Length: 160
Image (cartoon, rainbow, N blue to C red):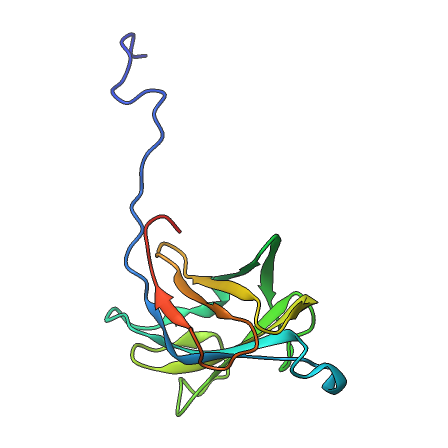
């Protein structure tokens, strides 16, 4: 046994996150699953992201998706269904994709992410969606809910 203290004892390792490998393509669309509430409130969001990484495919099944709006915070789980139910999200590849219907998104490819909130938000309310791949910074998307393409931006900051 080593009688001296080892360097760094009591210190936690610091791991720097890599650059985000996902980026928003276009805007975010918000809509209601209840047609009568269309334009008044939203409970579903849809947007397109692209794998900007040069290191190959990313596994979307290992991504975390979070929505923040005012005092509302929701962490979503990946759905195994084609359409998300409350509290879940789905990803559908655009174009050729990898052809296997799985959750791998090849470098340079895009996919549509659709998520279903567990409660409705007023249309126009400011919100932030964060899609974070394991070991990377999040793709942060901010803008008003229910305003397709208006005021949306993709950003990645180390504070996220």
